[in-house]
Image: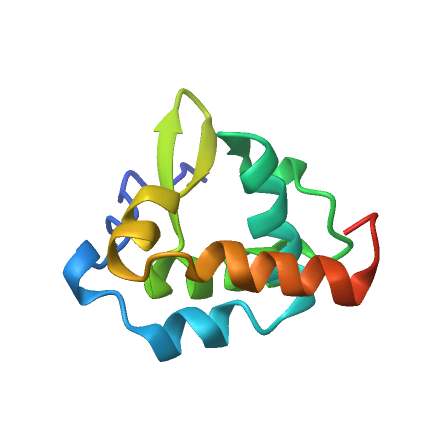
Length: 114
C-alpha cells in the first residue's frame, strides 16, 4: 500500500510578544522537558531523537509539542531529520533573565550532573 502524500501541518510557533509566562513555567515544570532545555542550552541544535531522555517516541513528541507551543523551542527540517533549537534570544527578550534563573535553580536542586 503506498504511503500517503499528505504533508504534516506546519507547527505553530508563538511570536515573541505572544509567549505567555505561565505557559513557559508550565513547560519547564517537567523533568524531561527541563532535560531537553538544558541540553539545548549546551548545544545550539540537536536532532529530535538524540536527546538524553528515557521516554517513548510518542511521549517525546508530546514534550516537544508542549515546549514548542510555549515558545521555548523551534524545529527545522533538514533532509530526513528534524532539528531542534532553543529560542533563548526570544525568551530573553520577552522575559529577561527568566531562563537563566529557572535553569540555575533546577541545576541546584538536581545536583551538578543536571
